[in-house]
Image 1: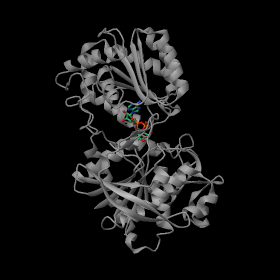
Image 2: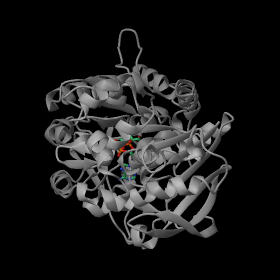
Image 3: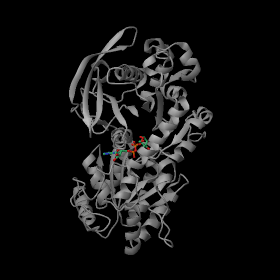
Image 4: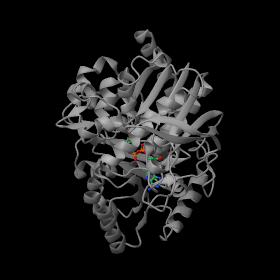
Length: 484
Ligand code: ADP
Ligand code: GLC
């Protein structure tokens, strides 16, 4: 089966969040189980230093520089680069007008224009790099216009007659709204707008993806249910209920080549489920790294996160003094969100012996925090999947999560009596509930036998991409069977 995945960010080339991890890992996993997979993504250039954006300039060889893209009342050109990720070709669309501004995401109409161009370029590029894809796998609003183009400008194109589009929602809250007057510039007629993109007087690239794609998925079964409700549906729940027969939730995987304490090259010491001793070296190194006194008996409570409302940082801010009053350390690695930064800097200044802060993006430190921490907080307001709680499990770090989206699917509450479960979980969006679960985790932390038990339960939980890739392949097959 030929699968082409289009994504605005792909590890190790570009990243602002988990989408990049998925777009880097899923194609490799699909290729391992026999699919003919390829990836298409923009080539970002002109990068300065900007919060949360990570871009590598290693994008392989220049393949050609004359990709014709019919766009904006004429023809634009892009160069195309190709690199390989474990044998999977990754193609880069290079156009300085759209992707040479030194950032991955901007804002407003121009941002949608950039990704409208990218979407159109993807469809033109597919024709030059082999046979038609069976599945064009699109991700989030940045690629939402691909199914819309296929349903309009490419409707009679024989190259695409058997191609199905598979649209994955990683985050429904970001929707790519734009001024409908731009539709002719992007190459759409008013009918595409009226019957698919219109969203309260604006046009929406996310809605286009949801409306025009052959099938829809999201990154956990629970989020697939939640987004059909007004609470989590971001005003698209009606459309999602209408399409519920074509909607499936597949939990993301973890790239265990990258995230494995046995082999992780960023750690002070490696360790495994059979011998945790290296974890104490990691804890010591982490405390030193954050310029904190080293007392290995005290628990280290951590977060690694974009500092946004989505991540429930509010609840941590409210519970933080209670957590610190138990004598624990608290370390944060956070990017974005200036007011949150100021708050946690204030906490650090108040309790300099207990609190360590690092603001910005730092991949090596993200690994070191996962390894050196004892508890990991993820009290998200909503969470399509979430990857850090799964990394925590693998690193023997106890996740304390709110039971939303993928957090509910991946974390099972630990029961002291049965010793089953891999973390702690609460449901109500409340800092008191978070604090309660933290206190419960503390009882487990101070009981060596229980601590070893919960760590083993976590470390033996398997969220590998191989499992997820099989689920995607089954879904692709069902979509193709239904289409033909
Ligand atoms: P989201 O995509 O919503 O931010 P995920 O949990 O799916 O959340 O993925 C976040 C990814 O970004 C993880 O790989 C995590 O380790 C990484 N990450 C988040 N913040 C930082 C940071 N400040 N520094 C380094 N890595 C980070
Ligand atoms: C989004 C979501 C996150 C998910 C990631 C990858 O960024 O916020 O929950 O894990 O996409 O699918």
